[in-house]
Length: 182
Image (tube, rainbow, N blue to C red):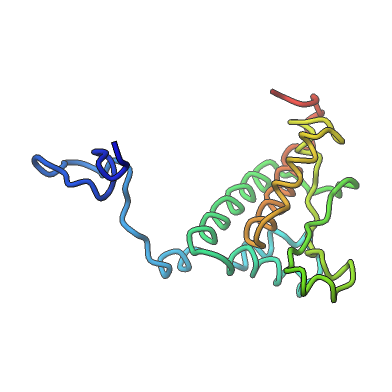
């Protein structure tokens, strides 16, 4: 059966009385203005200060995470970072430097990348890798693939991932590493 003929496809002509109660899985479109209304940039700026101490660098990182890409990504980034921040605050965890943190590469088109030196090709937020060691052994193919997945992609993804790993690292810092969990 073609996808549009499936009874749950949004363009399938529905027969019978109108549904009562909340919609099954389709929501109405949320306007960008509703998303930007709850995104609190100063909150995320303050949250990232331990990892990005320079205010100009931090403003750049916050703009990439909360000001770039589709509105639903900006909203999701805010919600997840703010919730992780609440956990860090509740647990009273202080962020510690991860000596094995990896730089988050600035993905540029080849014609722009060749004109930059190596330091220009990195964001000012490194991604801690200690939390990933709970899933895969450092140096393994799985570990390297996880790091690559988290640092690749557009800035709103790669930097949000790095920020979330920084917060998770602070949360998990007090727990003894148990090795990869499966």
